[in-house]
Amino acid sequence: MAATPAPAQVLSFSELDGWKADDQLAALASFRATCDLLDAPEWGPLCKLAADIRTAPQARDFFELMFRPVIVGDPPALFTGYYEPELDGSPVRTPRFAYPIYRRPPELRDGQTYLTRAQIEGGALRGRGLELAWLDDPVEVYFLQVQGSGRIRMADGRTIRVGYAGRNGHEYRSVGKAMVDRGTHTLDQVSAQEIRSYVRNVSGSSLLNLNPSYVFFRKIDTLDDDMGPIGAMTRSITAMRSVAIDSDYTPLGVPVWIEKDGRDPIRSLMVAQDTGGAIKGAQRADIFYGTGDAAGDRAGTIRDGGRMVLLLPIDRAYAMMPDG
Image (cartoon, rainbow, N blue to C red; front, side, top):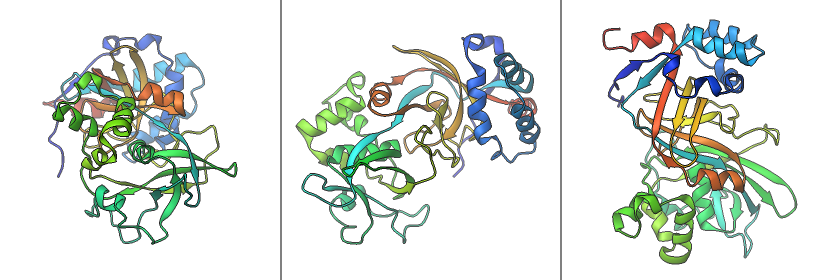
């Protein structure tokens, strides 16, 4: 079912808080990485222009001349963060590495409602040879699925990268929200770190099964070590320049101006290059913080308001107005 159209408001660039202080050239590099995948006719000329830009002033002029800022939906936004975990693992089951991540089952079709998380964790796929790798912590298996990609360091020194290959068709349910609903935590107490601690020390992994959604993975052999994971546009995403959005409201590939408030405010141009099961709504974005534990520590505490503004080609921007 298509999303209900959200209200839209066209702004000027002078109304974007911090616009002149940002590095639009860095954002342009991310934009160029997926620009050729945008198939509407207005994008072709813009992509050609973007390819020839080499300096920060040129990048700012490009966006200001060719785009208009558009607020879709009603702020405040909700910003969260995600990252690419680095985990220890094994290609075979051992006493330490006993918790599998699975390849996509061949019978699973897109949109199909399949086995629940509880059924899969209970062994419904066991013995079919679908195990891609084995980890040493069921909580990290869960969070790898939430993030959608990761790097796994094998005991023999190899590192494999895994990425999203599909999901079981069940709606994502927030474990953090379930903790709040149960009265064990307040909203401001819930973070990825707190969920890990609570599951390990108090609730056990049964709490994770309240989220019936389950993600399957595939090996990715085409990325250099310094490249980010693959996003929803099938290209590598960039730390602090790529966001996951709800594609029912925000088209994949468009530049997005982020005004995130909170303890570590952000005023930066990013690109909508990924999606996520928990990312729902017009003013909703998940900011990609990078790879490894430090990125995870930063991403795991983000739950902030602010404002998200799309940068759209001029004709498309004005066509979104109520009388456009």
